[in-house]
Image (cartoon, rainbow, N blue to C red; front, side, top):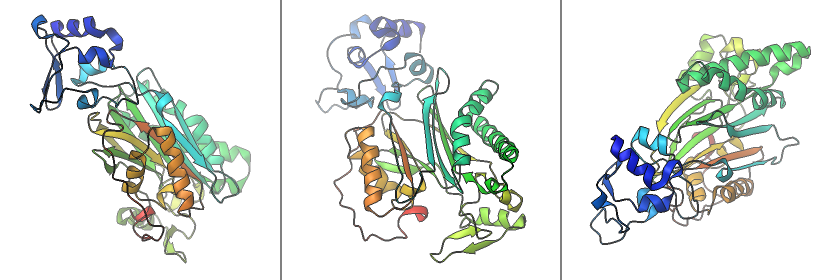
Length: 370
């Protein structure tokens, strides 16, 4: 963007450009870029008709939040990336955690700003006790923040942070002198959002991250279970073995239903690792409605598109988290269930049809096999 164009933008709205100011500027829409005209003659209060339909431009035409969420544009990021980027306010993020039929809720989650331009979202699903999930909940954030200070690549940041917290947890549990705690472990699914547009996800275990784009669910993580050929082969190369329980669920050494986790130190020599698989994606706020992080109390009973459709019918992320949690309970989940929903620019734009989901739907079509 030229200096003249930048000055034009600053004159219109300043550093906190809001929707009314942006709509008063005559834009040139070229598929993915929003270029602001520098000619005074082109700046007016008239609305632009981008598709020749005769319908006036609305805020939703730009894909920058619907009328229920009023957020400023991140001007520096928008200029840097060449596209309007709305601010993601943590006050609009929804979260819920249910104990289900368990005696204790071993799920943990965390939502916070990591730095001035990075937001942090994480879910941890503990097993064998809450110790590993508690430790990650308390210390993962600091580990990532310390690594970000010396490393710009967020995928590398997450990989290093996961491996370091796994080592730190082992030392912490060894100090306790309780050998049984070495069986404690946790999944970890962490999402970092930088500049409101760069989304990086790292995960171990079977908690999930999904992105809703144009109303369709895009899985950003893959479950680390012994059903995966590559994961099973690593377990076998390391001297471990895979067995199946009475409901057909594969387990490492007859104990653990996942092949990657933080903790589970009794199985580290058998191929269970803490190295996350990572994914980087550039958000398209005109098409991306939300990010959802879920633990398997939800994943096991609802598939990704079903989660996406139900959330899309809700008025806001906070309502959506409650609806998903209650729906999972109604569908019969017995596990702890946790969900975080982060709304993006197209929130409310892509409405799912009112679908009635059957309680007798196929078990294979839901959960780990979705």
